[in-house]
Structures are given as C-alpha cells and as structure tokens.
Amino acid sequence: MIPVSINTLEYQPGGDKKNSEFFEDYRMKIFERRKSSGIEDLLGTMRGMVLQVETGEVLPYLHELYLMSPYRFSAAFRNNTHNVYILTSHPDYPRMFILEPLEKDYADEITMFNRLYPLSSKKPNARYIGEIFSTKDVNETRSTLESHSVRFNYHHETKNPFFTDAHFVFTFPSDFTCNRVGYTQEDIDDYDVLQLGKPFELAPEVMESLNQVLAFGEAHQLNKLVLGVDHLATRILAGEREDAILEFLTMSNHYFWGAYNISEMNSSTNVTRNGYVDNDKKSPAKVFTANNTPSFVNSFENLPMPTEDFVRNYGRRLHHIAYEVLDGDHRGGEKNVDYVVQTLKDRGIPFLAHVVGECLDEPNLKQIFSKHSQYSILITEYVERCHKYEGFFTKSNVAALTEAAGIDERYDHGHVFD
Image (cartoon, rainbow, N blue to C red; front, side, top):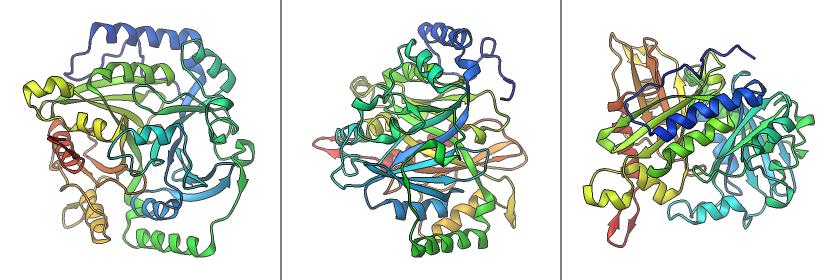
C-alpha cells in the first residue's frame, strides 16, 4: 500500500459550505477510530464498481460503454439469479461488474427501492449498487465494521448470490444513499478464486459487434482520450448530507476533501477522496450533492432545487460517473473534451447542454453531462483539467450542469412540477 499522503487528523477541508459542530466532531472521531481499530491499515483502493441493468439490456449497455468509456469486456459468469459481466480498463483502475437478472420478473431490495419513485420505477432493476474496496483481511474488516454498527448482508437477507456467496462481503444498502460498500482480499482478476458462478462466453456475433465499436473508437482516437473514472457522484436529501458523508468515511479509507456551496442551484457539492493514491483514477473520489433546503421549506423560498427534485423523482442514488479526458488540443485549438463530445454527438449520443468552462492560459476545467443512459439511468460526465487544474469542479460549471440535468429530470405530477 502506498504511504498515506494525507494526515486526516491534521488536514483542513476546503470549501465555503459550513458544516455543523456535530459533523466536525464526529469526522475526527471516525478518523481516530479508523486508526485505532485497524481499518485504516486494512483497506486499500477501490477495485470494483457494481451496477445492475434490466434483463435483456446488458448487451446494448456494453455497446454504450464501449463507445463512451474505456471499459472493455473481460469475462462473464452465471449464478442462480444473475449473469455477471466484468469489464476492465487500465490495470490499476477499478473493474466494472454489471449484474443482469436472469428473469424479467426478478425482484429484490433493489427492485423495491426503484419502484418507490416515479422516474426509476420504469426500470425497477436498473441501479448503480456500490463499490468494492481491497482489504488485507475481509473477515477482520467485517468484524471491525460490525462493531461500529455497520450492517452486512448475510445469506438469508438477499437473493443474489453475488453479495453473499462470492469472495466479497457487502454492507446493507445505506439508509442515506442506498449504495453498498463491498470488500475483498482476493485478486480482483482471479476469477476462479472470486467464485462468481459458471463462466460463459459472449456469442461471436456480439463480440464482433463490440469490436466494431472498439474500431470506431480507435479510428477516432476516443480510446486514448477518454481515461479512467474521475469521480462518482451521489445525490441525497438536504437533511442527510452530513450523515451520508460520515457514514461513507466510516466504511472507507477516504478523507473529507471539502464542501462548496453552489448558491445558484441552492445546493452543495461535497467531495471525499482516497489519500493513499497519487492518481484519483486508481481509487475514484466519491462526491455527495445535496440541496441546501428541503422541498417543504423551500416552498417558502422558491429557490431552484434540481438536486432535491432528482432524489424525489429517482430516489437516493448515484447520479453520474465522471471520466477524465486527456488534457490537450486536438486540432485547430479545439480541446480534447470538445472533440470527444462532438464525435459522440455525431454518433447519436445525446448530451444535456454544451461543454461548460474555459481553458485558456490559466488552469481551469471543462465539463459536460450526457443524458441519462436508458440502460443504467446514469449520466456520463466528461471532464478535462486544463493546465493541471486541481479540483473536481468550478462553481459556475457545476451550476450550469446541475441546471441542465434538472431540466431533463423533471416529473410533472398534479399541480407540483418538479
């Protein structure tokens, strides 16, 4: 493990979002307990991201990922309830595990979460599930975290063997984010040891179709310009912001990097990072976005609240996966991110707005959101850090992106339009 580059007990978070005394007190207590309990020494980097799609939709989703991301098919397995597809990018970056229920009428806790909300009920099994972290000892990790009141899934509590029979342990879905955190001490690429099910191959015509997308990416240089996952952004309710962050700090080895008000959108962006890596793509940052005022109070103020509306319409869940784009000019002064987006637009990929941000002579950031994937319900973000810009956003960029997403995520219901 790389020596820690951040002293969590001394680091002063950035940002202008004021946190409560409760938050600051327990933030330090959590860091102290992580050290004294051994969790800080046990946990390593994020080795996997897990999501689920509807039965029959994994193949078109693979084509989407081949076009829009650096992830490529590696292996597939079948357990009693699901097909499990593994995708890889750079060897040091997290793998992607895509779960596909074998039966269209499959239902478990994920299905129930999605059916609670109007804009996720149409895809009741499509959801980002959570991350998998490496650990030196999975049983000790579970035992220690259970002593910290973290709940883990056992055989009688979930139907999908991926969460209980493979060589992972997973927490219960969070009350604040609905995301899980998983842990494994095994080599993430040793499929025999992971015991994910019975292996199977993709049909030759499917692989040929995927290879055609891959060839397109190579011909248009997308494969070398779109790098790994930069960050994962979850949207939560206004009153649960601090609890969600503290909970994730309890279950991971991330530190709280900072919280920033996005006043134009009546929200805040809150970032946690892994202090054990020299490149965030090796263990992506986790971002938490929440409204500053809950909907029932905001009715007095009538301020924008696209973040709160997203949660009311889709539920607490991951909102987008951001990929870093290689910094540089493609041609004629066009930035790489502009070229990537235009190439994808020409291929039929819809985006919510234009690329926001400027890259002139000073360090800055250019960003854009795609529309929601019809398969994963996730937005894809592309971000280019110009001149070695440090950070995950600028306030003006986030305001523009949040506004664009909010317009696309509206739900008209009776006389309340949100």
